[in-house]
Image 1 (cartoon, one colour):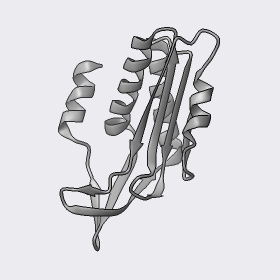
Image 2 (cartoon, rainbow, N blue to C red):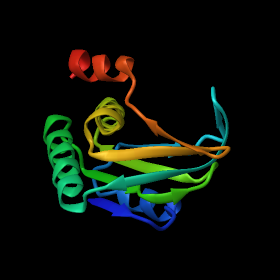
Image 3 (tube, rainbow, N blue to C red):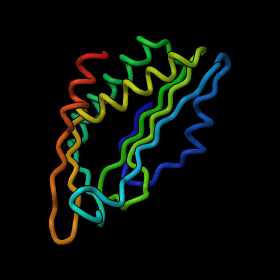
Length: 146
């Protein structure tokens, strides 16, 4: 299941959806908007995307992970719009019969989202808006590990 949404993420509802009949492990990742970076205090971040392109790309990520790691459930929720420090940006939940599969799939999905999903992130710091690029180390990781 994937969702791209403006509204806040309800973690407890999503976690309950992960448990199925043969679930032996459920793992989740929460991405949180940081309050500061090296340039100063972040007032908010703004995330933009093209809905059809974003949904298609994330669906591909989900399908790949479900098949590769034999997941029972996979939930990917990513917010867009104005997000304040301390709010959740992304939720990834995976469940499977064995914990290793759930952990590896969850890690793969967040790594992939950081560098390959078509989101554009801008940080509002003081009176400036700063475009955030993906980090080279994240790009290398997705190429090497997966």
